Amino acid sequence: VILYAYLPWEPPSLQFRKAFCTVATHFHLKRHTSFGFCDATQMDPVTMCDTVTVD
Image 1 (cartoon, one colour):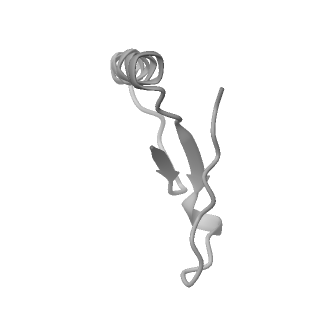
Image 2: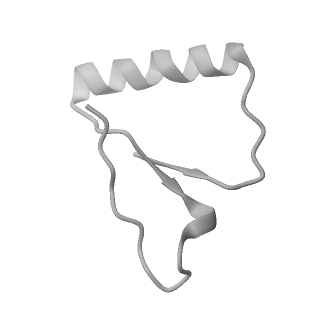
């Protein structure tokens, strides 16, 4: 799973962050899913974004 961040970006609410962390933790522990992120504002439109895993 890759999360894209577009700037300017407003941080999500605390409730949303907790909900996302709960789901992300569940997927990571039960299905060995790696989560990553990409700063989409720095991407060249003709290239793919590399996966960044968070362990």
